[in-house]
Length: 121
Image (cartoon, rainbow, N blue to C red; front, side):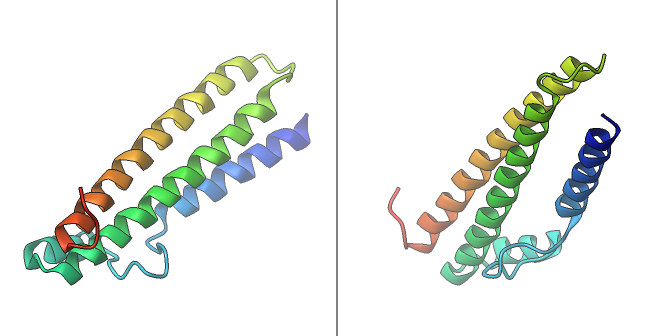
């Protein structure tokens, strides 16, 4: 049981590091909020594609977070710890949140691809 708690704690710590990381997918050149604002204000097809890549990378990160919480929720199933049911529900709620956020980022990426003229609505 102690080992399971250590593994889960390590997974949570690693997830927090990934979530806080400013590094996104290789094709995403935008790194800060100021970069995003500048790209939006430039309003060129190239900038729309940069923004789309940024949102696509964010969606992938959210999906990864959802998968990590699915694994943690599964780890709590069958646990005899008194808090296991509560933690399972917590993980399930985070899975839902991350999946919804990923969908929103994917929609935003699509809108910027349309604005760039590479995808039809």
